[in-house]
Amino acid sequence: MITSPQMQTPSNDIGNKAHMKKIIFFLLLLTISTNAQSDTSIVPLWSIDSTITTDVRYATTDNFTGKILYPTDKVYIRKIVALALAKVQKELSENHNLQLKIFDAYRPLSVQKIMWEILPDDRYVANPATGSRHNRGAAVDVTIIDSVGNEIDMGTEYDNFTEKAHYAFPDLSEEVKVNRKLLQDTMIRFGFHPITTEWWHFDFNGWEKFSILDVEIN
Image 1 (cartoon, rainbow, N blue to C red):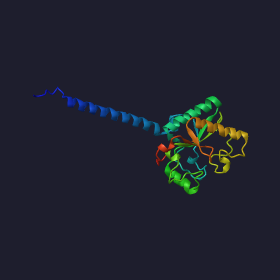
Image 2: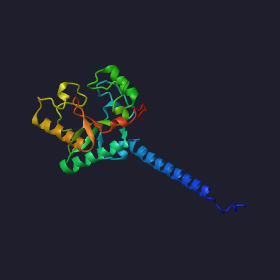
Image 3: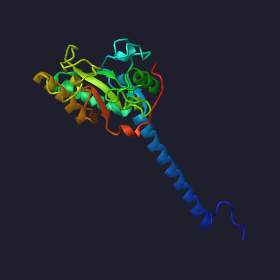
Image 4: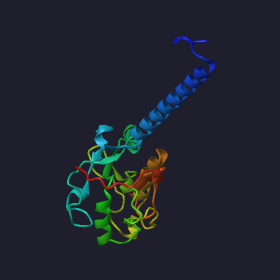
């Protein structure tokens, strides 16, 4: 018996259904992958929240190295981290009449190597052999400013590598303790984790899933 081209045998029908399932599964994976890439891609902070103040010391000589390490003062970060920072900014603005200031975010691995050569102390500078959370675009150095742009008192300047910059340093004024607690509590609330040795440094939860990058900021 000759089968008409328009007719399908049961085996052909099963094969077509299996093929369609593979296509649907592939499209689902593609969608998940695209969404994940969108959330974790490196983006300029201003593209998510242009109201956040930045003060990128590593684009100047006003830093612990005394060198210009970045060719630009633009701040880049993983998109998912930037979205969390926008929530911190909103919380501080609406409930405290304060704002965030960002000192540093994504940092190329090549810059990490320069820092380590100058200060090979992993309490303050991560060993480039293992990489910094900054190199993953998943860490930020921040402080709080008032409504006219003045930094509130945190007890030390940014990048002060002494025990006084440790969050729990005991010999601090009550004002400084309150200010550090406000910063830490607010950052934790929106997905960040502090470290003990630098009051300004916060890692985004899940930082370990992001890869180390060495893409120059420009």
